Length: 79
Image 1 (cartoon, rainbow, N blue to C red):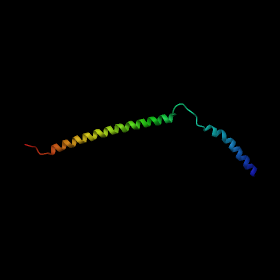
Image 2 (image 1 turned 90 degrees about the horizontal axis):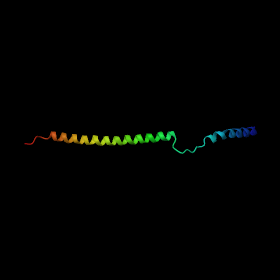
Image 3 (image 1 turned 90 degrees about the vertical axis):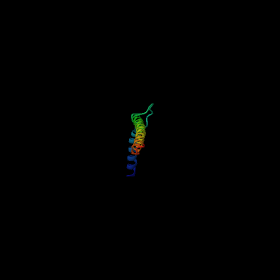
Image 4 (image 1 turned 135 degrees about the vertical axis):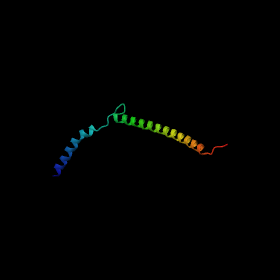
């Protein structure tokens, strides 16, 4: 029985070797498709963040001007 278990284990290991060899990481000269897509996503997120910051700044400036205009209109007229 022990002999059969040893033979079974040896057979399974030998059968698994070609599968493990197929998992070897291949050397490529450039980034793969997933890495390229990841870089494009990173670039798009950075650009969206930049545009959001610009818009936030503009909205803040407009609100500041609107607040000043409201303060001026609330003052009583001077004679």
